[in-house]
Amino acid sequence: MGMIERFFAFMEQGGTPARTAWVTADGIEFTLPPDGTPEQLAAAEARAALFDPSPEAQAAWQAGFDREQAKRYVLAPEPLPLAVRAACVALMLSLQECRAKVNEVLAAVQAGDVSAVAALQTGDTPEQAFAQVLQLIDAGMVG
Image (tube, rainbow, N blue to C red; front, side, top):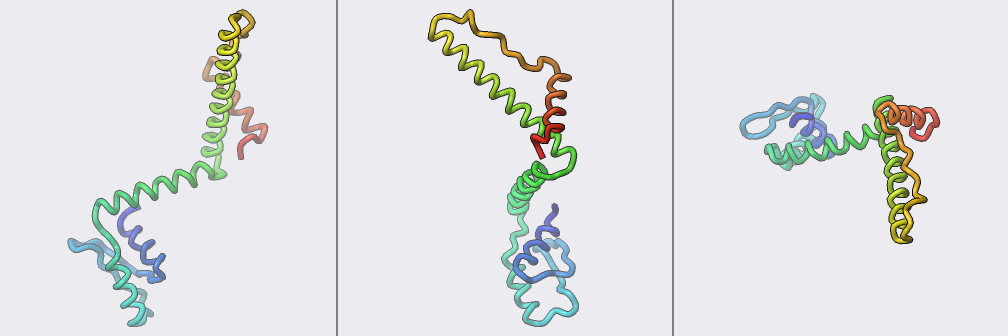
């Protein structure tokens, strides 16, 4: 999102919507809707004076905006975010399985007998990993 969009959102948050806006060398110029009163114009000008058009402010705002968009995306009900969530769950389950196996090996080493430790049975190929992701989606484990 650019500076103009950020300015409109800033003005809207302050209850002083702008009609048009454009970037100038001195910052941002704007107009109010035609039915704006002198009081609304004064409030809008006061609000606009608080707006920081610097590149640093834009970059900081953009970083926060991008983080919020990413959070919304992760939770979105569309197919691609659903697939990403399913892959994350599959990875988490694999990590849990690996942790359990590491703990089992550590316990066996401490006991002095690793002969009873079975090999870790996880998907070794991308196809097996993708199959696990599809199974998680089919089972409704992510939504």
